[in-house]
Image (cartoon, rainbow, N blue to C red; front, side, top):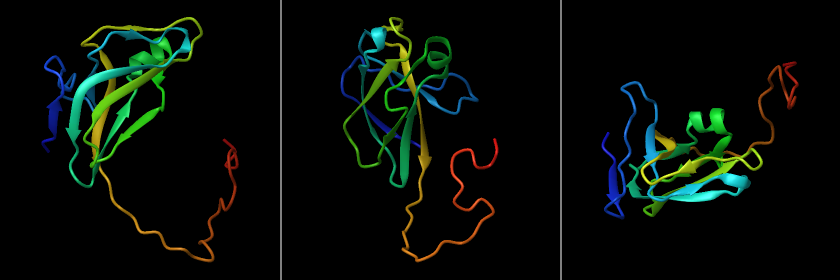
Length: 143
């Protein structure tokens, strides 16, 4: 699959895969910034995407940022719809107090994947089918 990407600024860096086995592509920032003092920071990527119809781009935190520095995407997972043509921005926050991570232009700030989606139809019913779990909620399975 080919995905069209538009550089909104000449210095914007196109996404890349770190290895042949990478499930997600790396997303780079154009701007310097930090996630100090738990203040979220929005990073510009300088890119706009044309996501194929019936697909969506999911944007995730980089695992190293989370495990090493408690830095994460502010909304946990970003969802970029196929009809959005604006700039992809990444908002990061640090969950540790008075500690963060500095970013320079060209650093990897997130990772993304493009996956197919299936539209569903909703059918209103009076009853749902029975299951062993039934209406048991959080912790009801004993784990």
